[in-house]
Length: 417
Image (cartoon, rainbow, N blue to C red; front, side):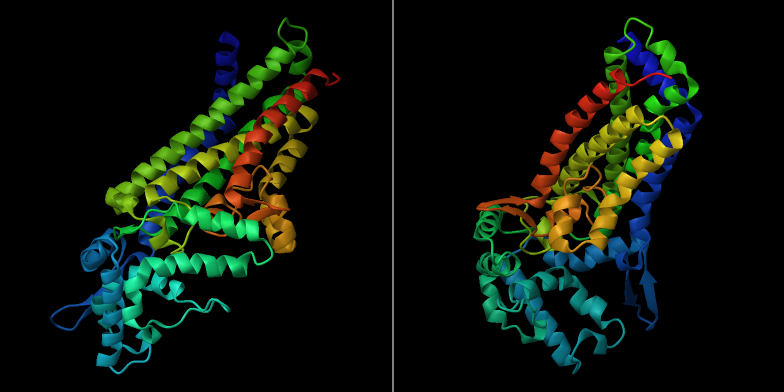
């Protein structure tokens, strides 16, 4: 324990570590605040004098919450039907074909209150063969009375399109969706950008922790200190384990504190009641996870922690193998961005097999576990279908001890200069 404390203190006293951890704190607060500044978080209204005022930030969120009280709480079929009828009546009233043809301010006062439900309604009425969603004006309001039955039918038709050659994946998706609580719940104000920024922040913390972990072994190789350590009683296996554990603790705690602070700040800004909203209302109406927004936040944070530890474990392995710090850091950062490169460069059916098991895959942009959780991708192996987020988590559970063990072996067999 004493050696562990000494090693942790040694890493934390490094100027670069202090700078990086301070940057992580500032990034956390900045990322929590930025989503509420987006124009999409605000709305406009027309006052008694006819002046149009645009509200942004917390004012816009508060105003939108007041507007959307009509769809707050349990989402009933009657509420969904009212949304369709209101939309159609508004367009008919002003002789408009689309919402873009409405007079200024009309959309915000008459349609925006029901907007959270309209996207999902279009989705469940999508053509089962082509997947094209109809306009709200073309939907029969009476059919919306079967809102939740239509959701069950939609997951079946969608999976026949998405996984037409893989009946096992179709069944897994249908079984997963059957576990989703209905009726859905919705509390207005929250923005999906906040979830995306949670993933972006986690990715930035991943990069910072990679920089912290890269010199753990390599720096001792370069300075020659490793030659001295190896002459001590615990200078090989135990010392390697202590270095690995200290890096895990520093990076893991830094990430956990950052994730907790982000969620505390973000949810306080948007309102904690928003975490009770069903994931299906904000993402796909037939999203597979049986989670509300609060549970989704924790799921992404926990998966991100496993992803970070797997990446740190790989970085430590590289550090134990490479004698040059620049080469080690460059190689580690390359693995951090490799999922993005694979996503863009390789065909989807090939790339998905690779980036989903790479250590940084769950936090990389465009390949993150948040997007996987709201999508319908599977690993199909014969008659076995594994949902992509489960593939990622399973890979990290294996990679963390695997690369840690390889690091110990690499270090104790490393030839000194």
